[in-house]
Structure formats: structure tokens, C-alpha cells
Amino acid sequence: HFRAPVAPDDVVAPVGTAPRAPRDAGDASGSQPGVVVEPTLTHELSKELQLYFDRVTATVRGGGVGPEAPVLRAALESLQTDNGIHQLVPYFVRFAQEEGATSLKN
Image (tube, rainbow, N blue to C red; front, side, top):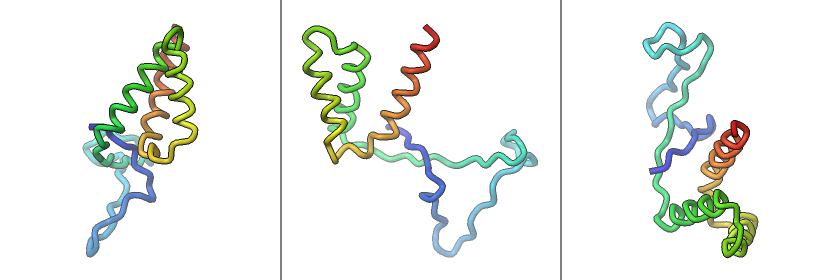
């Protein structure tokens, strides 16, 4: 399962409960003073979206050279125009960050 980041606006307290206070340095989590620890939400992506993500990231990692060049062009065009992949945006952002960090280290 993929884990999606939580936006503060997405966290809603159940009806009839008070919102939780931010964690402070006095709790057992070992967090820094003033640091708010947000929970993560787990949601399931369809198999099609998981396959799409895997295929696009594999193509990008491969550099899109040789016979993969048309596949890379199609993948980039799809990322630009397809409306049904909005759930994948956080994962593509994380992928880009990780790949960028890796290439900077090399």
C-alpha cells in the first residue's frame, strides 16, 4: 500500500470529539518542542494506478533511451494531460525528490 501525506485541512475530528492538541516535548514520542506530529492516512490505489506508477517510474529511471524513447514521451504526455492520475501526485513528487537526491549524491 502507498502512504499518502496528510494535509492539515484533511484531518477532521469525528463528530462529538474534541480535536487533539499538538504533541509537545513532554510526551513519550521524543519530539522537539513546538513540533507537531501529524498522522498519516493510508489509502489504497487501484491496481491500474499502481501499475501506471511503476511503469512510468521504471521508464524514467531507464532514461528513455533506445526503444524506450517513445514510451517516455508517451508517459510524460500522459502525466501532463490525464485527469485520472491526481491520486498519484504525492508519489510522483516523492519519486522526483528521491531521484534528485540520489543523482546529486552521485
